[in-house]
Length: 475
Image 1 (cartoon, rainbow, N blue to C red):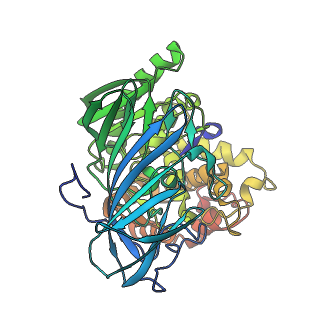
Image 2 (image 1 turned 90 degrees about the vertical axis):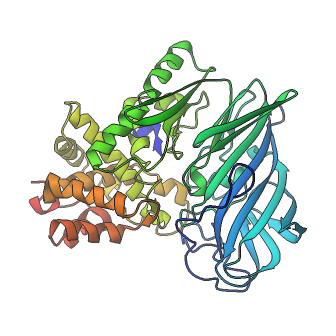
Image 3 (image 1 turned 180 degrees about the horizontal axis):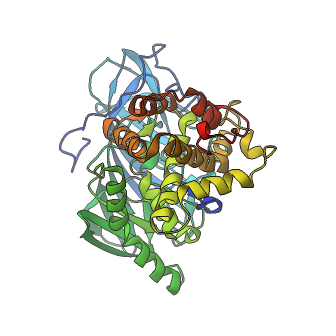
């Protein structure tokens, strides 16, 4: 994600069989129902401690006039222990739950859907949840995420989005295959992750189905519906699909289309910098006319608000395809591994374009922020120590900029060869998995052969301005 103020400062049907989740939910269940959360202290109710989702098959209908969403989702999952029941994350009112075809009891409070049915460890369980409601009426963890008007809707946000439109095991530790089928008026275009594989018109409605080739974590799934100009092609070895809202002004619509058509070019540039293949089968982007104040790295197809249609933001969101999408955080405390890395790629792209070097940017940032600035008064590697108002903390500007500064400083300390080897190794060895700050620190020490404990303490853990020393990358 990049916020406007931050720029630079199977199931069934088309899935023939369920894909195996590349990262199971952590640990075994702590009680017969499975732990109510997957174990993230920042958001204790996110996910479930006893299940590993294999696939989602989402079938939703959106009514623009009422702003009402209804549908059903088939979830194929494997329990990680024998359970008397389990939880899913969903905000919309639930009409029914079926397991292997049989209707079962459930309770629904807030965003916790508690399903009462025994399931056995390791067995594939077929869960179908039917639901309907008005997503714009619901909030969770301080987030009111539904983005819509009478012309357009985009399901995009972070760290949570899925519970507003489909039930999920909503945490980066549990990625799964997904198929997205959205029914809307036939005059609307529907865009989502992956590749469009079907569009069926039935009367005044049309159902459009999108199928990503790779599993993803729930918050990275999205759909947009509205009046969009859509283009597709293949450049620099990458197929791409882009969509630009027709509700934008003519000038911004033309600019947005021209910019997003360069997504494959920028994707290839990041590949070259990393020496690591793009981890997904398609790229592109969506420009919405709605203004949430940020862009978001939805897997394969980032979404951009009107105020974020610039090259720097596109580089940022495409860098996230490696840092955040392919390699997800193990817990939300490690969010700098997403945002600091994407910020660094903005800076490095500017350097390659002949603007400020990364070192000059680092020095300007460092000198421009006095020691008593609250910019330094936080731990980057644990930005929400009190677990209150975590959403504002984990996406604070100091997470982005101090994270980017830490990476440029590391580059200065260990040199370009080792630095880019660290990045390449990180994204290749952990492709489709998760990572933590301590694991990244260990990798940097392994590749460079240097003791970097004091360096990482200064930049990622200490709540004060790092000393202006060569050892801290500021010589």
